[in-house]
Length: 216
Image (tube, rainbow, N blue to C red; front, side, top):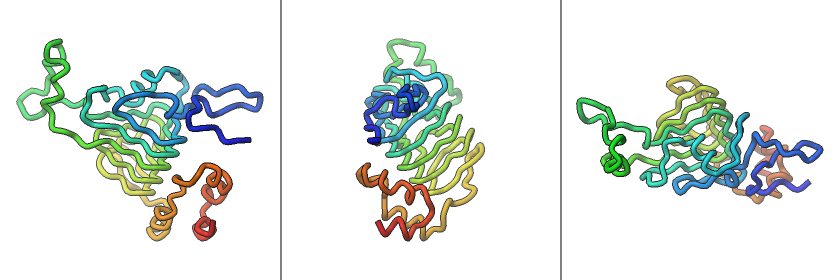
């Protein structure tokens, strides 16, 4: 069977051909001027929406079309149900006595309110990251390649490659592999291979023999 194109909306199919609508390739499922997503990254939700605006609003509800920051998602990222990216559009000014956003209730000031904020950095998810159910990724987080974010975790700041993060606030409990193996995986960058090569060596990519993977 040919592997589904990253432009396939519902890539998971039952043996009888029925599409599993709870799972989508994000390249096909959303359109947003401030979101970029790599090939084969998917999201799952038991109450799916097939509208591009629906998926964007579900994943990043405060990332407005005129936002200064972006959400950047790499290739082969796995996003479970309930994951939310809380981008800078959710922030309130904190430099004065009150944080109340009076301007959002004034139509004349609504669209310029966030221009008063300092430019925040983009929220970035590296390649081959697994984000567990109901995790919350805060504005400006930078999640390294191969990281695992545990269910319900609240993630901020810089998350190293191939680390495991759990809890609120999210804490790094361990690295998935020794540092020398992580360095070799980063050099291999299998996520950039052609999909035919990836599928041809799937067992090695999902295995744990770095020497064998390097050999191909």
